[in-house]
Amino acid sequence: MIRLLQTAGLLLLTFGVYGQIPVPTAAQAAWQEAELGVVFHYDLHVFDGKKYNQSQNRISPVPDYNIFAPDTLDTDQWIKAAKDAGARFAILTVTHETGFALYQSDVNPYCMKALKWKNGKGDLLRDFVNSCRKYGLKPGVYLGIRWNSFLGIHDFKMQGSDPFAKNRQQAYKKMCEGMVEEVTTRYEDLFMIWFDGGASDPKTYGADILPIVERNQPNCLFYHNAQRADFRWGGSETGTVPYPCWATYPFPFSHAENTEEIFKNNFQLLKEGDKNGRYYMPAMADAPIRGYHGRHEWFWEPGDVAHIYPVKDLVRIYLNSVGHNATLVLGLTPNPDGLLDPQDVDTLAALGREIRTLFDRPLAAAGGTGKMFQLRIPDGKQVGQLVVQEDITKGQRIRAFEIQAYQKGQWRTVFSGTSVGHKMIAVFPEALTAQKLRLFVKASAAGPVIRTFAAYQAK
Image 1 (cartoon, rainbow, N blue to C red):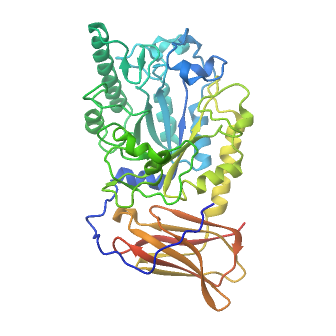
Image 2 (spheres, rainbow, N blue to C red):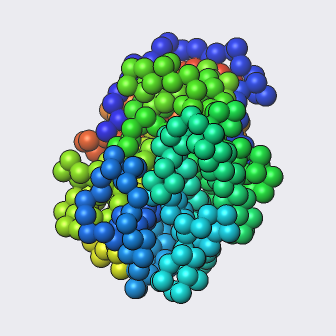
């Protein structure tokens, strides 16, 4: 629930003018417009029948990679379920901590070419991208190169300092660069490429991957290394960010450098951003759908269905991520048969229905330039939630605002806030009855440009 915040007095800040305020690239604007996406975690560990153990999996090679044998694999089922939830993009973990690549690589022999499954001809990334295009979702790729238990890479490093280790380190960097070249040239346009745990600095242990992405996928979101991040991790894996959450940030990287400053106060800078930051870098809020009752599982495990979040909790997560100016990424995990469990599918469909019920049809809406916008509420209707959106192509400008309700012949403030950005959702625990509502922008870095001020009926 969004809490009420006290604002400063009436003021229009004049220090900023359009052109100096950070604005999003087209890809960043599309990221925020998408609002909800999914990431599919799939790796060899899904097939071993054991609980996922990250600390061990990062250092222990899988004894037999041919356990990968999803007999009824259906990426159409995955993507349709994501679309039913309202997702507009989907990401596949093409490599994770085992180092096994879920496509036909020419530079990494530890890939689907080595499998007995489909006689070594399978290409899960190709199937995934095709399904995304079939159902109208934007495809993204997740590459984990920070750990590789098969090759003995830990935190980007080949262990040891002798010539043998140094030569293998260079070979690993070249292999990673080769995989990025393959992925960014073989699968048409990609919405994003995500290097889990980052991609380090090419001047030290990291592969020099940014030039490859910029050359082959110039419109692709990049996340992240010491040189660039197009969005930032929101500081937790709860699927939520606090309020306020600004889309601007003081550094061009998210958290690959300056970690002492960035990580202090429980990742406060990552969570909240910086309203005066020089760089446009909106937040990502991520969480696995199987995170209920103390669990936190990105990969399928036996007997874990009871830990799928109830729909009401997923709606709460949505309101406290998308409704706080962040993009929500839900983690989904297919089972050893190659399908999402029916319970996951049903939950995703119910989430989509609930979001549509809350936000499909406004009772009234307004927008434009200026600092005051008014709505007339139809007689007999009660308001349960309000949405405010800026035109973020002009930058995040609003610094303080109030929402006021006209009740019994007078205006009364019912919500006060600071950050708006792409979307701010105010939810009223008790339905609001009012003849009129108005949005009053009290402070801004430049002239406010309101894309939407809308009221929605209480359930």
